[in-house]
Image (cartoon, rainbow, N blue to C red):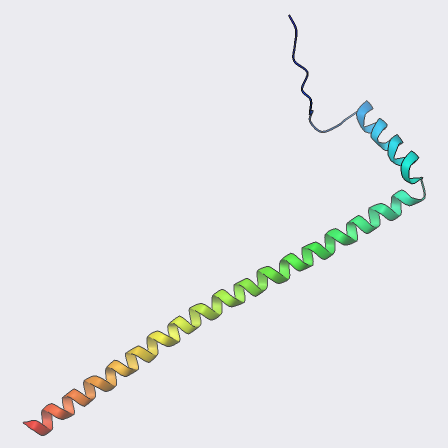
Length: 95
């Protein structure tokens, strides 16, 4: 019986990981690997900061929309109250 070999495996472990590390050392050199890891970490930190800033701006925009909707509702209620008062005064003067 022939078993199928997947083209893409899971996470490399054991011998595969050692081979990958050896290739990295040969390509970049032992001195550049820590610098590469550091710059990757800094880039990830900058990305995280940017994402948090965008999320904060979106939350502020949503809160602003909710507040303006509440303000608009209270303005409509105030206009309705004024109209009711005007109608009541008209009824009193006409009676």
